[in-house]
Structure formats: structure tokens, C-alpha cells
Image (cartoon, rainbow, N blue to C red; front, side):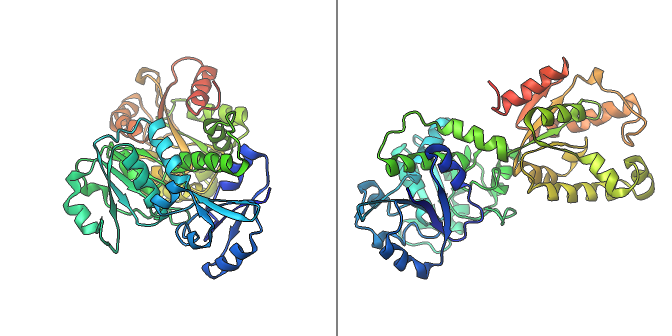
Length: 413
């Protein structure tokens, strides 16, 4: 079968490896300008295609048939060529709905602000309505049935769910957020349909405010499976979106270890890297090599501010790293930006050790003595809890802690 994804740009897309997992077929990316669409559809040189930004509505005039649900939504992201007849479907709504259900997001009776007015937004609105929510489209150029961002902020207390169905925050524009979450008072969930990075800046802002958040990777996988069922004309009952996600995350996601000095991060990072085949990155060691001297000497000669700036610069470089195990310095959590960078492609584990088992060391400029390390623990424990995805108690054996990390990451049963 000749299968591909069309859209522009496509540098961010992980679709080929997802579809290859389900189909064991070649699946390619076909970035094209809008003026090439007409000739492409006239040639019909494909068996099936998926459609992404910005063409989910623009492809519809070129189709012979449109599935009733896709017609109702007003957008198509899946097209199959059967004997020269092109039929369009919408599997985005299926993928979005499955993601909300799988993660227990309460929708019944909730009001949802859906950012954006394109094909992705339309699919999300349809899914939310089917799940008993009241979706409201938010647009920079509002038309009948939608509201402006200014009106959204004025009415913010009405909304329990916020969905980002715009490309804002997508790689390489990772630093962009579509709204200021500080201005919302009643949100229960934030859902970002951007899949790359795994954790967008909007999701990070939700987390630090205690708001539950989801990213678009699971939706992407769910809609891909639904598309592949259409391409093949089979139920593909044996296919598992969850298994696909686990497989891809093993290759793509990094494991980030945070915690106090002497909690065991460095040794655990070495063991997890060896166990999983990931690249090991010890941030303090990397910085010492960069400085050409010890961290204690940097603190003494140039001050903590100089060290923290270098630490943030390293975290920024690591935001693009995949399939690593990163052992962070104990103070990495002092700057929220560090954690946003590291979370983009990583799952964060707080290596928690009983305070009685922590101890001061001469090479640690801020925790030489027992009193100093206990003071640091009191200052930092809430931040470790805030930024972590999982807490790993490291009070037993090291192999036990490694097993806990890999189980929480979904890489072993």
C-alpha cells in the first residue's frame, strides 16, 4: 500500500513510526504547498493518506465521498482511495474522545473552551459534544458561534476544560503558550492536542498550577489506529494503541531523575541507562567538564548565579535530547524553566530518600554539613513533588528502585 501524511510543515511529525507499528507498511511524509493540492488529488497516486495542518478542510472539495460524521464535523484527516474513488473520514474526533475516556477526564455537563477554529478544533468540539460537554470555539477572528480571546478571559469562570487545538506550542515553537492560565479560576483539565513535544509549555503551566493536563501524543496514536483500520478495511482487533505508545516512548522519551544530593540519583541513572540502552547524561559532570574545574570552585570563584545560568543553558540544550537518562543536580528545581525544558521529552522521577539517610559531603558547596542538607531538604521537597511525574522511594536496594522507575515508565510489567 502507498500510505502517507500530507500537510505543511511536517518536520514535527512522528506519524511514520506510529503507522508502521500497526501496519508493518511503508508510510511516508509528503510536505506540500497549498498550490500543489489540486494536482496531487487529480493524480490519486496513493492508497491512503492522513491530512494534517493546514489542509483538513481544504482537501474536502477534492473528494468523491465524505463519511457522514466527517461531513458533520466539517473536516477530514483520513482519505482512502478505493478503485480511484476518494472517501474522506475524520479519525481525529475518535482519537480525542478515546484519549479523554482513557484518562478519566470528566466531560458531562462541563463547559469547554476550544482554542482554534480549524479542522482539529472542529473534531475536538464534535467529540466533546458527544461526551456531554458544551464546547465553545475561541478564535482570533471570531465568527458566529465562536468567541474572541478577550471574551474568553472575561468569561473564564464558566469553563472547566480548556483545549488547545491550535499549533501554538508545537515543535519548533516550543516556548509558545496560546493563553495565560493564570487568568483562569475554574479549570479542571487542560488538554493540548500538540503531540511534539510530549509536554508542551501549556501543559507545564497547567501542572505547576495543579491543573490536570493531557498532551496530544495519545490522541495521535489513537487516530492513527482508527485510520489504519479504514485503510485496511479490517478491525485490527489485535492492535493496541497502548502498546504502540509504550514502544515509541521507549525510543523517544528520556528519563529525568531529580532529588537531593546523596539520594542515589547518579548511581540509579547509570543503572537505568545500562538497563534500557539509553544515553547517560550527568548534568553536574557535564558542567564540570565545561567549567574545567569543580562545582565547588565555580561557586567560590564566580558565585551560585553563574553556576545556575550555566545549568539552565545545559537544560535548554537537553530539551531536544531523546532516549537519555538525565541525572540532575539537586538544585535544578530552583528555576522552573529548567524543569519545563527537561519535561518536554522526559518523564520526571523524584528520587526520594528518608532525610535521615541523607548526608553532607565536602564536594557539595551548599550541603557540606548535616544541618545544611536538612535545610536544603526543607526548602526543596515541595518543588521536587511539584515537578515530578512519579516519586521513587529509594530506601531499599538500588535494583528495587530501578525496577520502580521502569514500572512507572511503563517499560516493564
